[in-house]
Amino acid sequence: MKTRQIFDNALSALAQILGSAAVLFFLYRFLVRTIGVERLGIWSLVLATTSIVTLANQGFSTGVVKFVAKYAARGDSSRVSLLLQTALLSIAVAVGAASLLLYPVGSWALRFVLPASRFSEALAILPFGLVSLWLNLCASVLQAGLSGHELVTHRNSLVFGASVAYLVLAFLLVPSRGLFGLAEAQLFTASLSLAAAWIFLHRLVPQLPLFPHRFNKPLFREMFSYSLQFQFITAGQAAREPLTKALLAKFGGLFMAGLYDMAMRWVITFRELIVQANQVLVPTIAGLQERDPTTIPRVYRDSYRVVFYFSIPLFAFLVVLAPVVSRIWLGRCDSVFVVMIALLAAGWLVNILCNPAYVVDLAVGDLSSVGVGCLSTLTLNAVLGFLAGKFLGGLAIVVAAAISLAVGYLIVLISYHRKHRLSFSYLWPANSFLLLFAAVLGSALFLPYFHSSWTSSLFSIRTASGIVVALLLMVVLPMWAHPMRRRLLQWIASRLPA
Image (cartoon, rainbow, N blue to C red):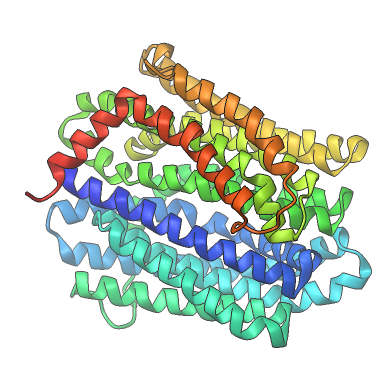
């Protein structure tokens, strides 16, 4: 394996997520104070409605990573060029057609879930959301081409640059144009992202023309046969969030939908720190499937141990900081917001622990259990969410979403272990009791502390000292005492230049 390149890619993924998290933190604080939580909920709902178009993209993006890695390993640049042009033209046409069809459907959905006084504003920005998504999905295909070359560092640079551009444009446009300014900022950012990704790939693959114009049927069929399997999976993944937000808007109101969007962003930021670093193994495992498949179970075990080592303390810490985030974004400690973060963190923690099995299944093309898990998640989310919202209210919808997410991905994990006859004892790595104990005890101690804090700023002495102490006791000390810390430091040191 190209261990040095894996290390660089994983490190860049962590840097990109941290940088994007900082951008997101300031962006949400700015938006809440400029346009308010309800209008933020409208924008979130519009994006959730348009995100259904991602069904036409995700399978192709994964296929691009897999097959670009295949032909790049053979040194066949001309076929890589044909593959990228074919994928981009396919997605551009498919997503464009889907967007045109989605506009009337999205209009109906927004009219159904929104109050009449808010519908016209949401409908006016719906075209911006559709065009922005079309551009972003085209750009994601090109970014997948960079990942297929194992140049995840380049891809992450583009993603972070787009985040910064979005923040700057929002600061410039939102104060004067409100929600329209936010929509315009996303549209401009998506255009820049697409152009930058094409320039990067053109330098990497000189055979690429200035404008894509060649379509290769055999390559399309090769990608399509793989992508079709993955398309079913992404259908469930893409539909889950719009469904949850629509149920929240219907049964809990726009304010509840806005709170959910912010809570989700906070939790997903921590999830991406771990998942994106682990995701760089997809092209590596795809290569091992061709060269040395017997090493894949060892790669899975090692990646699971690393994911467990990082996810337990970090997710406990993100829950503990929920009251602080609430005070910074909302100006007060909102109990519903804090509970939402805790519920979503529980569901996404299970998702993260299942991610190593998910990554291996994607890389080797064994997608049956992944499909069953994603369908189970979507079905449970729809049924439990509707019943919870109708009889118990908005917060119960979030409970249903967290439960359905955990159950669906546990199916993936259990199926992987049974299929490959792996012991379930791997799921509890040795010497991990201190990590779990510190996470549980720290949550019980520090969550009430931050919830009762009178401060609204990170810079108060009480809040800053509390964050430092919580970070030390819940994250730094248990992770430092764990044997995995020594293994990781030795591995990193062996890859650094002399």
